[in-house]
Image (tube, rainbow, N blue to C red):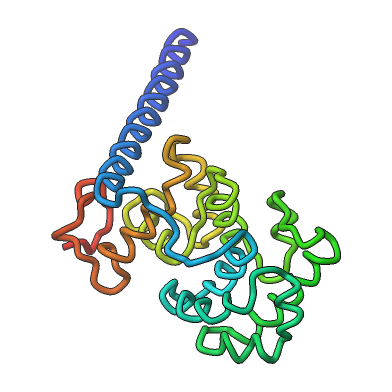
Length: 230
């Protein structure tokens, strides 16, 4: 009996290892297909330097990159460093970004963020993830995007597109963006972590759309677990 139990446990252990291996091969194939379609994926936010990129990402919360770029085309003519934000002032900043959603709270956060960078970091942006999170208006998504793009770290940022696509196709099965990020960073192979969220964002914008996903032209259709796919 003991021998049978040992054999059974060994079988389940090897079977679990096989499933993990197959899962990794499937995920690798999925990102390989995406990378062949979306070549050299990168952020679509316009920026001048590290500070302006951080500001652009803060502004992008619940807003499209297109709308943010329209606004920052004006803002970044006046602002390039934290001191420029303070000189501009909250009222003028609010007037410039008022076409963006949540502009009142974003203007307050950007002013506060700039003051902290000046007073605590000599106008430099901290590299540590937790220090980034401590800045007003900077959440996990913003901090992860900054580290990915500016610091070249393999961080997976989860916005509405990444959240939708990941949970729709079966890469994750989570109810929040933070949990989805944790799940993706566990299962996505290291070779794809730098590009992963850029690829998923582009696929979400162009194919796996929220209301009417273009399933018939989807390059990862065979990998998808979406029950309503066409």
